[in-house]
Length: 523
Image 1 (tube, rainbow, N blue to C red):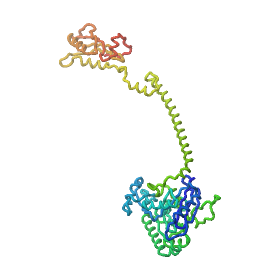
Image 2: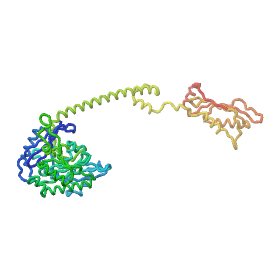
Image 3: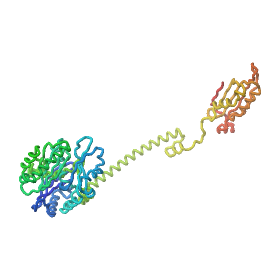
Image 4: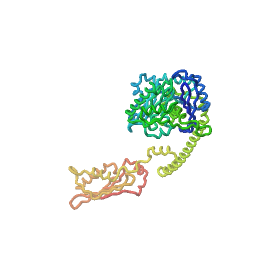
């Protein structure tokens, strides 16, 4: 469980809210106020020695590993509200410097810029609160804090921090309407308009308190503040198209009734005291010594403590070159838990790798068995190696094409082309044609019986067919016989053996017997 110490101080006292958080949620709260010495002049800061003594006592109460959250005066920070289309949400870091360039009297390289999202006005747009502070002023403020033995992990502008109250005050977080929060500090007055648990507008007013609060409210300073506050609300109503429904008041206030009366008369809105959560005493119960007025003094420290808990994140000034140095005490505090967590992560990772390896090994064995079964069926070998199977499939085939290179249709075409018929040729009639070929090679016999005009024409047919390369041993079967119309009938027989069929030639040379399977055709 982490302990967050959010603190604010003036020349008189240091006030802090000690919040223990777990998984981003507050579990217990304590309020601490320590004196810083007498006030030397209006608006004067406490001495570094007094601040160091108070911070040392604060860390003794909170514990050496507590994380500090401090505020930077809002009067040192410039705040602007911009509206962009939703498509620009990922480019805000690039767009904001261009938008602020014309609104700031400083060079952009001398300014630290950060932002947080404000409640949207329309569904198709986003609104952004952009914060800009001079790096030199920020460096001076951090140097002052460190001179007082403070090295805060978070540094938040005091007026922007008011949005953190939504983390602790249900009246703010549960409201869908805008609420004006006014926090009175001895040297400043912080105001913020919060809607839907997000800060919509904020402003910081300097206050020089030289007398009672009633005198200041009725004097020139109070009148000027109330006029500026009213003008701020008017500008907000125009830009945001909404008005606060009520005012919640907190801070270091002695004459609460005077403030309530002045705010109600000026703004015409109901004003109530901020009801902050009660601190937890030593017995684990709410401390009865803290009434509503005393708790209200810690409105700004509690807002600072709630600011880092906001989602989406809020403005943070300790970024870039101003990031806090890693603290050795924090490292020692988190060393053992981090080591245990790292071991748990390593063990979980190792177990996951082993489980996945075991599953993949079983899958591989199953696939190898299936590969061996298919290889035995299709390749005639029982092979489990994918590389060997791939090599066999890529190897050129040792056997020729199983289909015959010369079919019966090729024989018919060759015979038709070889017999000279038509103009200048002979008249030829086919009585019978039979072709016998092996099923798997261009080897067989053929027989043709036809009628021509004379014996010379039958010789011409025999000579023409003998020119076909696949016809071997062409012979005349029987004598040429006359027909009733005076023409001549002939019959020829031949072997079929194509020279381009290497298997048929090899079988012929070896005297291999033809297989019984044959294809035949005749007419």
